[in-house]
Length: 501
Image 1: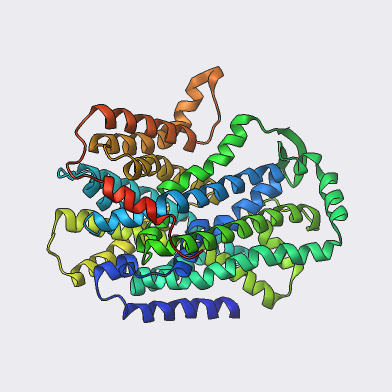
Image 2: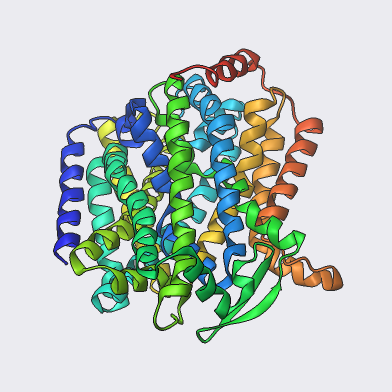
């Protein structure tokens, strides 16, 4: 409780400090595009992983075995490709596109849409899926407090939501990004430290292997998925091509996540991107590897199997370390939860302000007015997400749906906008709508296929449908932008090869 209290006080102090560093709306929304490589890298990855890193991923590996780690493989590949293919071009494009502060504003400027339809649709998708995503963070926070302190779920959820809202409202992007440096360091430390400690208690690799294999040999097979029910493991079933593809497909989501893309937009220069990429990818590899090992070592180490697989990290900490060090590791879980939810709150609120209030209500609004409206929007999103979170639910299921929604709606369109100069407004609009609707409806569509039912993760059909729609309408409907983006593409492409070596 003392360690948690110190952590909460520190992040609020950072919010108060950052309040004086954000005098304008661009400062509040993107930190004035002055964020350095280290802060950008740690903020991007900390905002990416969320409580999923310590709850859902170890839980998936704990229940299904090493085969569930295909998710981690897909995420590592997706992280690298996002930094390599998207970051430099998006940083250049958004500044050229009338210094766009949101993804929706960039798409409107890039495709010269004066109707407002593209901006409205993309901003609506952003706000809807982010509200759902923030709710998953609140759920994870409530579960964390419930498991550690034995308090009511709703009380823990209220504490987490309240702290996040306070410092996000105070300091905006700068406060969020600054706290992410400490939180990112805490997260990778916890993900790596706990497996080392538990492994030391177990003795040697042979002992670990034997203890896991006794529960079910499928737990150690990358091509299989063990079954898990009532604290017992069964033989399970082999992982087919569709199952492995669904797990790897998580990596496709990176290209359309606004809270991660906002970090690329905020970095001070494309010359900082190569260094940020190396830091970010290294962080992801270390964190995902450690979290996957936590799931495996939980099988071998825990005295009693946990019935809620998402609690394996928490139970391992309780069993393996003293309360003071355990407090540090638990704070890392809280850091993971809030580092994602606060980013999503900020991006959703910024979108409501920039893409609805200023775009359609008051284009000449002052910075003071825009910041005030953003504060109100942030509170509104938080209240709705809080209401959704009170109903509970598995964190992994909520995250998976929101992640797929963003990946399918924005990923194909964003990549085409950065690499295809003649992409049209009609193609962008068709891609966003098709991707979002496919993700929302896929669980109802797939059962109707009867014997051809796939069971594939909704990200896959969402991305395929969005890409097809964007290419079809982008080729035959509407006209390409009058402004030539070929020079911007060449400038952004050369930026990938610059920077510190």
